[in-house]
Image 1 (cartoon, each protein chain N blue to C red):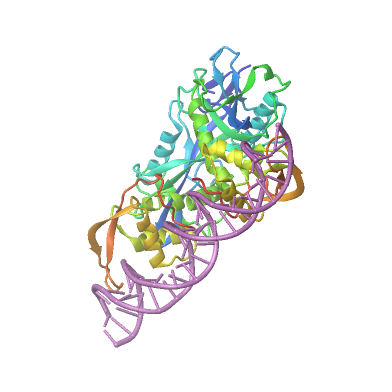
Image 2: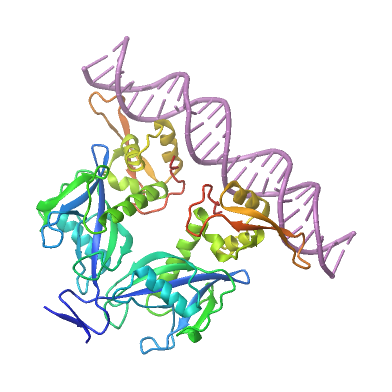
Length: 228
Length: 228
DNA sequence: TGAATAGTGTCTCTAAGACACTATAAA
DNA sequence: TTTATAGTGTCTTAGAGACACTATTCA
C-alpha cells in the first residue's frame, strides 16, 4: 500500500511486440510467465512503467532486459485498457512495436532465461489479450513496410536485395518477383544505396550487390513498395 | 476519496480530437478550461476514465457530454504519458480521433457552455501537450481519408460528390480536379452509390446527383483516393 | 555442362493528372 | 446571354506485374 491517489487508480504497463526474422520466418519475442499471474503461460514481454519514466523509455528498458539490445526501432502501437483484461486490477497497457536485426539472441537480462523467439505462425495461445495485441502488431508491421524503411530494420548494416525481399515475403506471406522487386526498391532514390561490395555465398548462384539503408526504420519512402 | 495501490499510481484520461467541416474549413472541438488546472486555456475535451469504464466508452461519454452526440466515428489515436505533461500528477491520456457530420452544435451537456468548434488553421496555443495531439490527429485524419471511407463521416446521409470533394480539399489543403475526383470515387464500387436524387441549390450551377455512403467510416476502400 | 540466384528488358494494364469539352441550372 | 457547377472524353505519363532473357557463381 505504498501509493495513494484522489483519482481512480490505474496501473500502466508497457508491452513490446518485438519482431525479427529467423530462417526466413517472422518471429516474435515471447516469455514464459514466472510470476503468480498467469504462471507458465506464454506472453509478450512487458512490465510496469516507473513513476517518473516516459512510456517509450519503459518499452526500451523492458526490451533491453529481455534481449540485451537497446539500439532498436521502436514505436507506439496502441493502448489496451478494458476492465478485466488483467486479473491484478485495472491495468492499462501501452503496446509498442519493435523490429530487431536478425541475430539477436535473448541474452543475460533479468528475465532473459524465459525469453525466446517463436514463429508468429503456429504460435499457441497467449496470456491476457496478448493474442490481439500481436495481431495488431503484425497488421501494423505489414502496413508500415509498404511505405516506410522499416523492413531494413530487420537486417544488418549491409544486406542484399534478396535478403530485403525475404523480409517482405515473410511479413506479407507472399512471394515477390525478384526482378520487379529490384526495380521497386531502386525507384526510391533514398531507400537503399549500393556499398560497392558483393556477397558471395557458396553454391547460391551469382553474388549479389550489397546495399545499406539510407533511412532509419520509420522514415517515409518517397515511392512505396506495393503490397500484392 | 482516497485510492490506494501497491503499484505506482497513474491517472488515465481520454482526450478527443473531434473534427467537423464548417463553411468548407476543417474545424476541431475545443473547450475553455474552467477548473483550477490551466484555467482559461483552450484545450481538447477529455476527462478521467471511470474505474470500470472501457477507454473507448470514456471517449464516447466525453464527446457526448460536449456535443450531445453519441453516434459518431471514433477510434483510438495514440497515448501520451510523459512525466510532467500534466501538473496534477502522472496522467496518461489516451487520445481518440472523432469525425462528426457538419451541423452538430455543442449542445446542452455538462460542460457544453465552454465547447466550441474552431478552425484548425489559425488556432492559438493549447493547454498541456494538446497541440501535439491535435497535430497527430490531423496527420492521421489526412492519411485515413485516403484509404478508408472516413471522409463520408463528415457528411449527412445524402451528399453530392462536390461536398465529398470539399472534405478532401479541406483536410488535405489542396484543390482537386472535379472530373478526376469523380472518376476516382466511382472506381471504388463500394465507396458511394447514387440515390437517384438530385440537389438543386439556387444560383449554384447544374444540380448534382446525390450519393450515400456504402461503408462506415473506418472501412477500407478497395481503390484509394490518391493524395496529391 | 546444369542449377541457382542476380539483375535487365519489355510488354500490358491500370491509375493519376492535365485539360478540353459538354450538360444543366440561375441570374 | 453569362456564370457556375456537374460530369464526360481523351491524352500523357508512370507504376504494377508478368515473364523472357542475360549474368555470374558453384558443383
